Image (cartoon, rainbow, N blue to C red):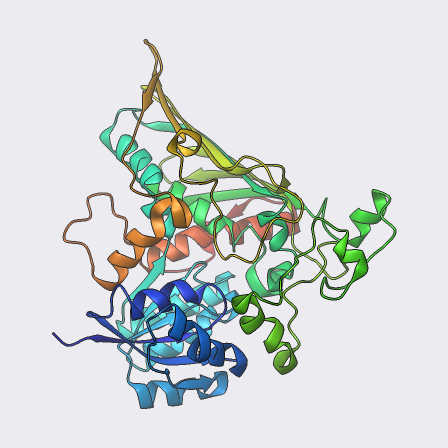
Amino acid sequence: MNKKRYAVVGTGGRSSMYIKALCTTYKDQAELVGFCDSNQARMDFYNRVFLKKECGNHPDVPTYKAPDFDRMIAETRPDVVIVTSMDRTHHQYTCRAMELGCDVISEKPMTIDAEKCQQIIDTQKRTGRHLTVTFNYRYAPRNSKVKEILQSGTVGDITSVHFEWLLDTNHGADYFRRWHRNKANCGGLMVHKATHHFDLVNWWLDSEPVTVFAMGDLKFYGKINAEKRGITQFYSRARNSEIAARDPFALKVSPDDETMMGLYYNAEAEDGYYRDQSVFGDGIDIEDNMSVMVRYKNKAVMTYCLCAHCPWEGYRIVFNGTKGRLEFNVVERSFCEAGEDMSQFGMRELGQDRSELIPEIIFQPHWGKAQVIDYECESLAGHGGGDAKLLHNVFVGADEDPLGLAADYHDGAKSILTGIGANISMKTGLPVNVQELIHW
């Protein structure tokens, strides 16, 4: 069997999941043929350390700087390009890869605004290439179980949804340390983070957003807010700062942490990017508290709230239907400890004891007692057990997909439309008809 050839553009922390999977679990189906990044040091780290330790001494992969993307495609001849670069560049690499004859796997969000979204849609239609958007939350067994329940008709027609997502003072704060702190890079948390949540609702309801109204502000992070709370000592970044050493919000990285050192600290000289910026510094222009109301095509209405400085992490969602009420409560981490290691990428779940971790899925019919609904799950690691299932679907495929787990560019666009509409609404103070933002 001929192996599919893959190239990766953007070699920050998120790319490691794909790189390791390509070189280990799926090495019989796939071949990694190229790295592309704006920073040579990061690509060198993967060749020098990651591929040797995590991937069984895998041979070095050819590296190309960002301006040489076209040359990488010509010389390495990938079938598929995996886009894990900064969000604001997703459209650039996605469109160019399709124009050069490649299929694309894009990390979420597919892109950050309506103009870039339209460019991706037009390019896909023109080229006919396949574009997959990786929504790993769909694949988490607990989220799939909710889809199964709703799809069965148990709750009836959904009339309203209330959705609350809590990011804690470690994970939530991390978005304010990194390039995500600037909306021009990621569209803010309404796009970068909430694309997961809005995709889940689109998928759960089998619908799409029509009207969006939102309010949001930066209320906790940032220097001005810290000053209001009486903080008088500040720093620009945590490394070598005595003030940061006393700040529980500061990212503290050991010199022995090969990954953080290799991908970021040892790569600073090349592009000046600091991974450990102060969450109470100047220059942050994304919101940390957001509330949204959405009307969907099927007439259901959702109220949604995202807070990025909570003492625990998880989400709660309620579906009110014509046959009863479905409640879904997920605790991903029950509390934070000051100085907790934030150098690990992705979700950090509570542990492996299901008695602590299992969320409650509760259905209460109109006339009857509440019923707790269980589900089967081999592991809750990696976004609630979703990462492993997603990777199998992406690199091998699925014989059957009764829940519609696989997401393409239509799903990618519909998920970001809610966040894009919310950003516009927060700016104008008006509701937004998101159906008018793009044209299919």
